[in-house]
Length: 472
Image 1 (cartoon, one colour):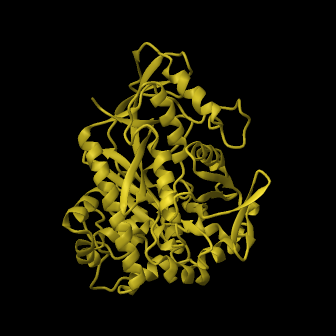
Image 2: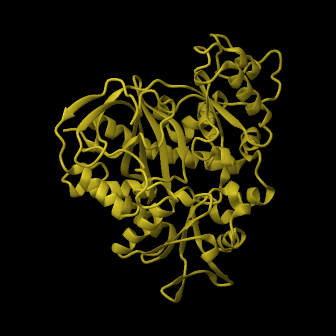
Image 3: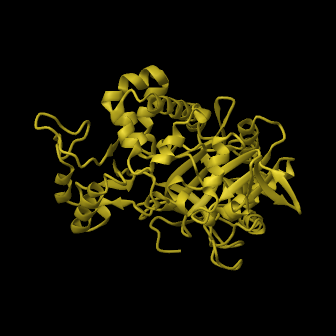
């Protein structure tokens, strides 16, 4: 387990951890992807959901509609091309055929069906560090939710909010009450195949015809896309795209799926809009040149909420800044700068920043390309800054301030029947919003709690992962 500071015995064990573990194990989700069923755990189990206050839950609900409005406003801004420099940023590294597809009228108003922000809990409240519109984890959240509800807990988002709202989102996207749904999982996303297969099975339990498929299993005809179900070919009405657009060239039949979408033979969600899948969207929300647009499009209340919640983010642009100008909004050692390279010389205290790829790259998947400035030697940090700037023409990077989070006591059980202990943990919240009838409905919230010495918060064997409930 590792040596955690401030760990202490909290209370006698009960059987909740065992029941939760058995439930997710029976769903084939209690193993490292690709390993045997008896392999190491995927994470640590808590004997209770992570608790949030009513004020925190209210803010999460408000953030859902605000983020949906932001996606809609960003979509309009891009398609209007009124600020060409915005489109220039968002188009970097994308092939022309994908950009043409992104601008096609058939999907002009289409937005992602699921929105998941990564939210840190800090002294200054919630802080959003990333947005994901092709998120993993919601199948695992649904499985955990079912297990905790079975143990007598009430959860945020209702007992099976993820499953039920995912079904409603797919029905709405298809435009029919009884669609055939395919969740397409690519090789790049294969680690998530078990949870998507589990989720498809849960959807079938409530009457939705849903299956998880690999790209090569789809059959294309001039009438549409088909899958084999128990020896019978059925036509797909809505395809949930669980693969990244940067990976299209490596996905079998990807061009046929794209063609079927363009010809309106199938509905694909999230839509083929790579400009909505960039971390630099967070930087654009904070850009002073766009403030009037955001206020008009979002309204003062939503804009203020997002500006307060979203961490200031900056695009690492390597182009020269005129002598009479400065990089908008950024300060280094209390002063404005004209060249990002000055950050290479910072002390450990001064380089408390995070660099990460904006998107449309395998490096943007998970935490592969993330660099934490004060967690590496100065020479490596300087190299990371240089690499990010050199990559601007193909894979832009963004910069964010590293945030200290609150340390929160989270109960856990290493093994079923073992002692219940408490970890002083850094916590990330991931609410899952499902877009239905123009609203962002919160299906549930996944809490990931890691030891205090971990700089990055993500799923790992040392993380406690649990759904959230309302503190009573």
